[in-house]
Structures are given as C-alpha cells and as structure tokens.
Length: 311
Image (cartoon, rainbow, N blue to C red; front, side, top):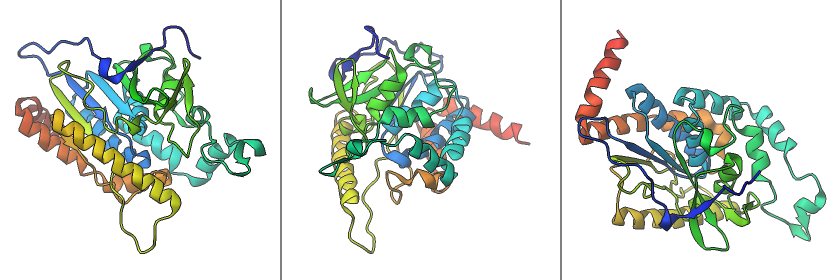
C-alpha cells in the first residue's frame, strides 16, 4: 500500500548522500544489477563471490530482475541463500506452473478483448507468489540502501524508487511490457525499469569509490529457424537496451563491468535455472580478477585467507 512518503525521483535529479571513504578504510562499493529476465539469475554468482571475499556493497541499484535479486541481498540474504531459493522456486517445473496458475487472470474478459490481449498478468501478484517471505515490506527495513529503477510511462523518463512500499517498487521495475500489466504507484504508471536504465551503474555519482556493474541483457542468438513474434519483440528490446548502455558507458563507465555468459538463454527461461547458473559461473573469476587489477590490497589478503580456511 502506498503512503504519502512513497516517492519516485527522476533519475537525473537523484543524488546519494554518501561521502567518499577516508584513507585506509575499505572502499565504498556500489553494486548495479541489470535487467534481463531469467538471464539475471547469473547475478547470484556475483553475490556469492562478494560474500566469499567478505565484501559488502554500500548501496545496491537494480533494474527489473536486478532489482529483485538486489532486494534479497539488501534484505540480508546471502548469495548462497538466494541461489537455494531460486532453485527451489524455479527448479521444480510442476511447482512453478502451479504458482503461476494460481495468479493467472481469472476472467475471460481479463485475458481476451476481441483478440488475445497481451500483458494481463498482474506482476505484483506474481512477485507475491514467488519472492521470499523474509523479504521486507518497506525500503526502510533493508540492511543495505536499495535504488530501484522504473520507467514513468507517461512522463517518458527513468525514475528511482527508494522509499516506502517495496513490493510495488519491485513490481514497477519488473513490469515487462507485453508480459505484465503496468504498475500504478502513487499516481504514476510505471513499466519495466530496464527500458530506460538497463544497467543502473550511473546512479551513484561520487558517493562510492568502486562501481561494479553486471550486464545480463544479452544479444539475440541465431538459430535454425526464424524467430517467433515474441522472440522478435524481446530481441528488439535487447538491441535498444544495448544501445542505451553503450551511450552511458561512453559518458561515465563503471570501474568494473561484468557480462556473464547468458546469451543463449531467453527472458523467460527461469525453469532452466540450473543451466543458467552452470554456464555463467565464470563471472565469479571475472569479478575476482577485475578487483585484483583495480584494488589488489582489497582482495589479495582475503583470497589468501579464504584459501587457507579451505585447508
């Protein structure tokens, strides 16, 4: 439920109140998790590697699936706990279909209006059925500050949701057109945050010392047959999101940009959670090596400690 305090901040006006860390202190880290549907399950590897190194982000920004994964992490779940939950939620096909069936549009009029009507699933109901019960109900209860991107449909701009009701904000960020109905939050109609901000690494400004961004948009892949209409729709969206990210990279790139091996997976391949995790696991090594190049003093001792603990 919305309150008078819930606020959507236009992206261009957003500023975080953090200051840069003092000399000798661990650097402040901003973690940006991008959108990409089921491909975003690869974010879990990044969280697990940060956990293994004992590194905790100062602030997390997320778009679409990145906002969902980021919310779990900001609530205090470990990467391993999020992995276990994802496998439990999506790894059993019958159970997954049962949950979806329970929140389907119930009236013919909700699904059909002359011709087949796309985008009738209520994303808030879907998330309520699938998100962990331990997820907090409000931003203010999170252990780590979370910035959620959503696109103001009529305002033609990206907005940052960072206070008030958490579920409606996550729903707004994940309201993929043609799949889900848009979300009305505090009088504003929102659609998928990835439309305007596919990888929200540019929200931190000078408030952090290191920005780690994870891009799971992917690219359309060739196959032996012509793409379906829905594949063309999602593929065109991928190309648009890539173009937006390329422009942002030219202006102010993150310190670390990670791109897991997820191209062959489709937006709705959540039932292939085990395969997504298996094929994207090398992103953990990519993150470790990038941190070693960037801040060896931050990572080297932690790696030695971890290896010593294993023997």
